[in-house]
Image (cartoon, rainbow, N blue to C red; front, side, top):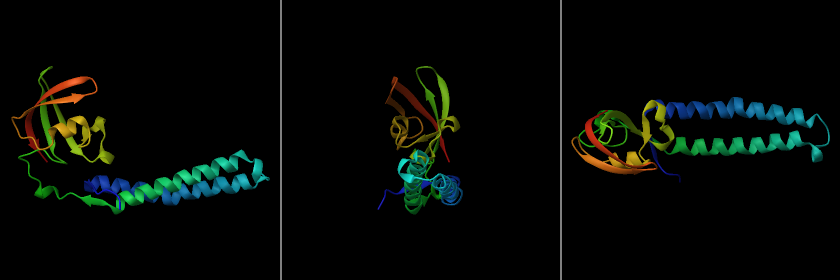
Length: 157
């Protein structure tokens, strides 16, 4: 039994689409590569055949991992979220106290994290540091570049 992960509808749909793509198009492409390599004769010294079989093994591993993620995925009911404290799927507006700059984050599962979109993992140092905090709280969080001081300005969903 894998660990349960929580997803938005959008995040879970993306996971299911990737799984569907790998099991259909991905498997068909590998099968084509293996058939093509087989046609070239002696399999004992056929590097293309070996490479295609390795790729097939990696694809099946990825499919199995995605199947486990989907099986253990839980949707988060955003309508029941408490916005008085920071939790997964909270949108949090903070002020970096050292540089007096406002930043907004959305806390998501590790699989949905995307820094460019402002989505940070609840497993990240900043994500962990913000969890359970309230508006007005000031937190000091150790990040790879040192310490960052944040003040929570707003929590929404």
